Image 1 (spheres, rainbow, N blue to C red):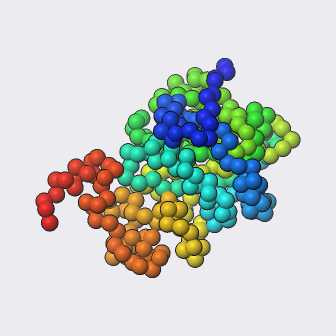
Image 2 (cartoon, rainbow, N blue to C red):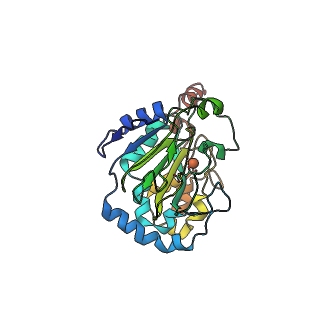
Image 3 (tube, rainbow, N blue to C red):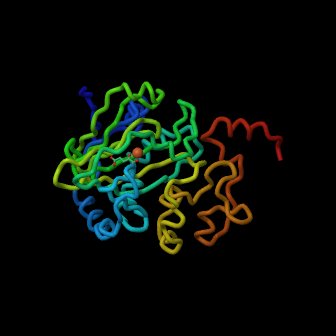
Length: 294
Ligand SMILES: O=C(O)CCC(=O)C(=O)O
Ligand SMILES: [Fe+2]
């Protein structure tokens, strides 16, 4: 069954994209990255892609190459990670959490002959923990580095499956997220989806950049994927997104409660005190308001 897929223009309001994502489990923004930016990215990662092995199993894809550590390997990927429309949408979508963070960076190259990936929900990475239906733990993007077509393996999405159980989801229709190079697909951590079969002669290439609430373990270890010496040259906003920040309440400090970014910069200040840090989370705020004055 065909499903109409409203595509958002690149100057969209992040809250509009986030609202659609919340309702349907996905959204597509067309033409967000410029062709020259993607040419640059291609040039930065080409030798890393060639050096990446194909997948370990049928789920990873035996004709699929996954190439990570994009913060370290590609200055242009850093721009995609911090794209204002993407970050705005992610912050809006995950605004129930005190902070958001980068979860993984990975170029997914589906080569000719690959079969369809098993449909899944990405939040299963968290040990299959049954998060409440209304608690979104992650917000994902897939930038089209090649065109995404039905023939070359555009991502399959089962719209509206974020809040339904697997048995019901199996009976719901899917579509393939066709989009042009430079467009970006958003999908949540609960929606059923999977990579497509590649029946074409060319590689389907996407840049999968995902984000999560600040209190979970990141899928890709950002502290080792990007060596500290290189991390020290990056700007604060990107570093905070990578996890060089207080994740929530007491998460992520170093040594004597020092802030991770301050430790990287060598200033060694302490993490922010609870009362300064509670604004974005109502339960956290209430807890602070109930503390006796110091
Ligand atoms: O490559 C794709 O289109 C989707 C891949 C995916 O969903 C995954 O590996 O988790
Ligand atoms: Fe997935």
